[in-house]
Length: 312
Image 1 (cartoon, helix red, strand yellow):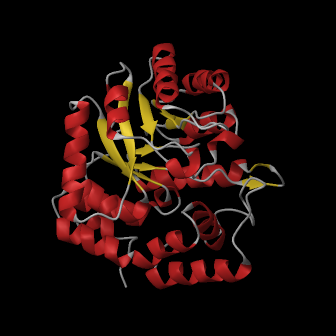
Image 2 (tube, helix red, strand yellow; image 1 turned 180 degrees about the vertical axis):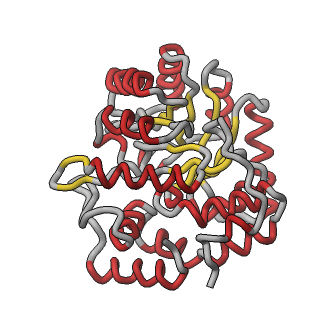
């Protein structure tokens, strides 16, 4: 069994960066209890990330169910982050509400903004570009492009990446992971670099492909499960940073049962919530309604995988 509690010691561990665009950016859940933010549980999740030494913390992304919550989450995160850069998700249905979220993030002391083009009606490319232009022109905080078509229903193209990279203030792009060969990963990242002229950092998401994204040259891993289980994701990230490529791949392969859960249950959100519940990090069903926890049977399956992999 791989002991992820100690595996980060297998390779040199650099000090956390001062940038939210490199290394491990951990995306925590935003747990609720009785329909309200569970501040104690949320504080505990942030404390875990601080103790683990993640490179940045990103509340209010998809894992944190950003559009459900208020500025309070931003303030609580920054207050407990102990100097670790905090990237605040600001996505909302209207530009007005996005800008309100920008103000809240600035007031909380955020290091960067994470913008998902959320909308009830499908957005056009021009509408998305203008949304980012509006945010970037309003705030001095750097903006991360959040490419997550599974939640926003907007599919970015490399051409859109290129247009966004030309906007002053857009600093990074969070690209979704794909089941590509190592050679295809190298080609994909190189193509994005070329299209964006090296003007922005590139980070990988979808945890099953995080290792290959980093190996192919992505600057950061924007990790959903890293917000609940930072140790195994940090171990992979540090291994890549140290040039221990085969070690990183072995660690990622060891976690395949976890990646399989994400595939079987439509993503990482409900699995992360079940893991947090199993580990006693949250109290019961911690997702905001109408979202619901996994069934009792599926939760037992998640717990079995966590225990078999020795995750904690």
